[in-house]
Image 1 (cartoon, helix red, strand yellow):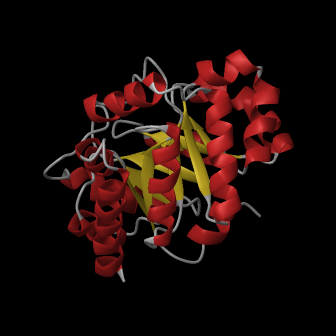
Image 2 (image 1 turned 90 degrees about the vertical axis):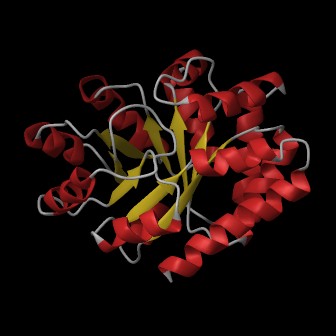
Image 3 (image 1 turned 60 degrees about the horizontal axis):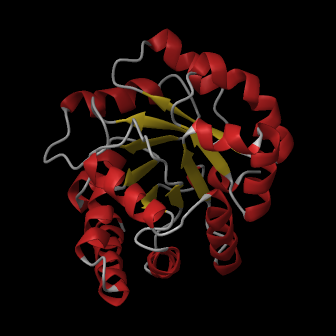
Length: 261
């Protein structure tokens, strides 16, 4: 059974996002280890890409820092392997398909699974194209994560859920990733509607940045919540001091874990 399935079937989870290699590969590993020690229940990791169309300026800047400091596919595999050696925590990967295609799809899946990845979100691959890769994912021991947008129809949402084997990533709002001061009411209605049609775990992301928002989403029935930009902003603030970055990230995670119990 996939690690995400085991986790999300038994408890609700807070899942921080980290761009691998930001600000440097060495600092990135130390910060992620600190997050694990801080009590987060799973990880979403990004592979830096030069044209991240789903991401806002904060995540884009983190990818640029990582790329500038030599974080390529091979270096990401090293980092994931080190994280897996450090912890048995579920690891999900947000990746743009060009990075997989350049490696050779099946070979890339095999390498990622061997490094310790549990599930993959191929963020720029639509459902119609993603279906052809499901067999290769399964063969490689990887589960699938698929996006459900705010304007996804009920019929299409059902198809997406039927092709999801880890969890559905429910996008909280329109647009790219980035901190929002307030979440739209439709996000909470969306959770309830989707829960009524599936037993696939639902994890909410995009725009979430406070412990109170995490608490509200979990109370509404979400199985998990992802925060990315808010944590990435902390790293950017302490880009030249990994020690301070670790302290600040750990404090942020501890605050959320305390609030959600």
